[in-house]
Length: 93
Image: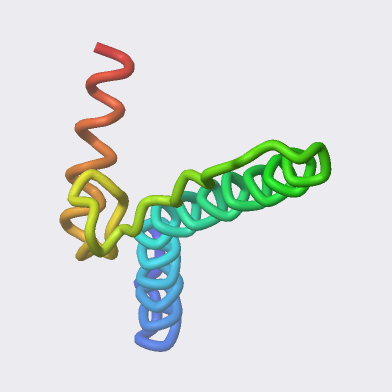
């Protein structure tokens, strides 16, 4: 027979689970921001090289998640879980 967890232990476990859930929900948006910054950095380098060679260049803007409904947005934890479950189902049939 296992002993019942104390209220303090249960509260710590609940807090740790909430923190893990919040981190998991923020991860797609953080990943999107990192990828957008990588794209912007690559474009800045390409723009500088092209300008150095005297070529006209038009930079491609990085999509803004506020104006792009397909971009990752801040979502509730429930929405993030459902989206992650759907993505896993699609990837693994």
